[in-house]
Image 1: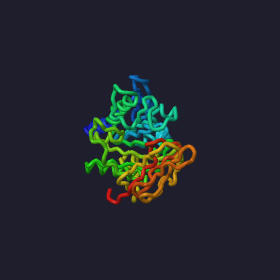
Image 2: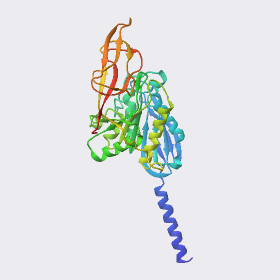
Image 3: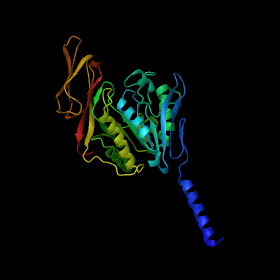
Image 4: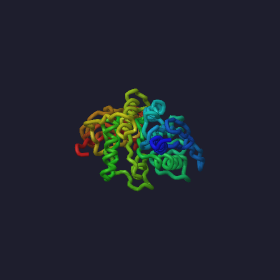
Length: 352
């Protein structure tokens, strides 16, 4: 055998070894294990404690090429339906052969809320599943689920998107959150993730907890661990409108292009409405609510946005805008209790 032939065999062997090294190994989350180029589904098992166990659906889409790990999570509030449906569609449509890296998808965290049609909280322990991160393995179901997600998803990913929307009683316009931390490099990435997602209203959120052991929110749990994360919202009042689902699906694909996980360029929103402050209006009375404005409306300070009557029709409370801004959401049902949120008004800023 000639020296040239030997060199060719050696060179081929080296290339094969390098390709093998570059090929991602199997990736496991919960009971879902996907080899390179494969898609797998399974569950994150949350063991029983002071209350029942639960199983959280998880999908792993493991690309054929190396790249980052992106986590997509929805259904922390189980009646925010549009976001749940959007991630279900992404599980079906994402092609591992086109992906560089790995996508972890949790389409529905709060199964008891979804199954029992209970807004805002997990009916097992009456806790919001987006307020108790990083969780506690010895707490109630919400605490334990948050702990499992932190350990098996947040700590395994490089980037994260948390999906929400208007709950059963919230008439909400689509928007996203820019969690401004003060770390210029990190903030530049999360800002670009928001712009790539493409929703035209972005809330600047700069007062999130900084302690990773008391991070509270899912996206904040990732950010306090150095993993750029954003939260996005679309869908309202129990509806699954195609335009909301499409916005969430297309926004995700655009972020994946920004992260070089899919071929092509992201579709960056050019002139978003930046919200520098969010004012919550709470009812001082229990009764029947009548809105006077719609989601997305611009209001002046002091403008009447709705009112509450007693059960005989007498007006007992008038809600007014505390500042000029845009209606991010307004209560979408007649039921109103004392201290319930009537609306969120976003104050527009030109200097985010």
